Image 1: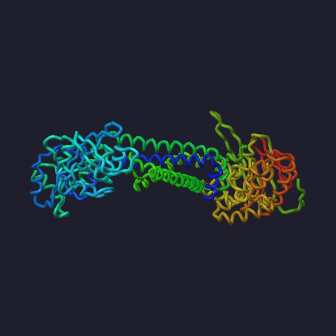
Image 2: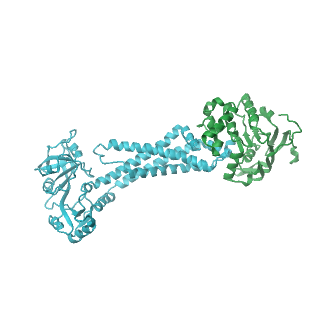
Length: 379
Length: 247
């Protein structure tokens, strides 16, 4: 009877395609939007993710996110280094600045200043140049997206000069930094240069990055630093979560994406529900004939669920394929770089697609269950 | 009507209805469709049920076919008390014992002739392949061996009705219920269908009940029950029993 169910479905090619299209469209919409949502959240924490060697981040107690740092006194660094259990501690500077592009427009840039000696805080993914090049005078490293923003149509290269806060800066390396949340251009340089490029005033320290001597005691060390210094000291994972939480709480991103997800589900239910209902209505006489012959309701339920399962599986497969194609193609652009179709999203959307088809089918099932087999005797 | 020797012993009773009542709500009023109807059909016979539109023929065969329940009275089909069974048991009874031929054929348009004819077997749990093999043999008996894989839309009305007959007989039911089997056919096709029905459907242990308006096929009947206003008013044929006996 499962074969019969599928043949009935294939027999009405238009509705079959409509049903599959409905599920595919919902799947594409949900996969794409939810993946972009998680990609955006990941971008918010990308600076933290790019420094895996730092176990603990020390900051002003008022700081909630890496996006809004507050200056610390320069003496803090030495005091943190004196706390028992600290293997090393380095300064870290983060600010937002403006850069004039070749087209004459201004663009936001994230300025990262790292310890002049150790250069801890620069990702080790160098596409051109080396970490040591950052020790050269006026040296900066930028990410490929930033290079394309500054020099459209040109291949990433080193040796070019920029003017930052009326000071000369020379690109010595291209670093494959993770895409950031607030700007496409990320500039890495030594702390001493970063403060000059941004004209940030006297207090130039934003964070202190700490490596625990014993990785097993990181949490206790963070607590000790916080207690002894009167500052906020949290583990890397905690700071990452706080940064993402800040974005979720203070921006309209969750509401915006949540709305799209709800619409995706509703549109899916509407398209699949209406089409399936029409399919059942047009086949009601056939269902009545099957009932008259002696086919039990349980079999009709199984047949309908077989049709629903086919629609859900094929529609989901097409939608997933389209979403993967979207990210494979659009992900090459700088605006969407770093956005991926996450496996967790694919699994979650599979469940949602199942829910969409089940809800849409349930309404039609009622008609199948209660169709009067005696209707087959009416002309 | 077919001439049968008068000394033939009576066939076993396939259907026995007594005092069957059935009403339907129509707005605020209730329409009594069957008014204490008595009806009997025997195995090995072609029993016709005739009468004007609205007299209750279709309601009666729906009740006999275990598709509709009677309000009162007794309905015994092949020894099974139809009124005491419910839902799944009725469906199982229909699947195992009854075959239906509908006026509108009711073939599944997405299935081939062989697939349509195999439906009762597949529904009873046979594999699709096994079902189609048996159905193909039945269709061949009905002269459709060249059309096994054609879809209903590719067949003429007469051919579609033969597929419907094959579907009704493929599982060897003990009672075949036909509703206006020739109404959608021309005279020649109707005649052919009735000849096939008599040849294939009728057996000593198998009865056929036909509801029809088509006087052209009355010659195929063994017994004709005339119905009017929810009652059997006259019985013609070899086993004719004066209706007055029930009155």
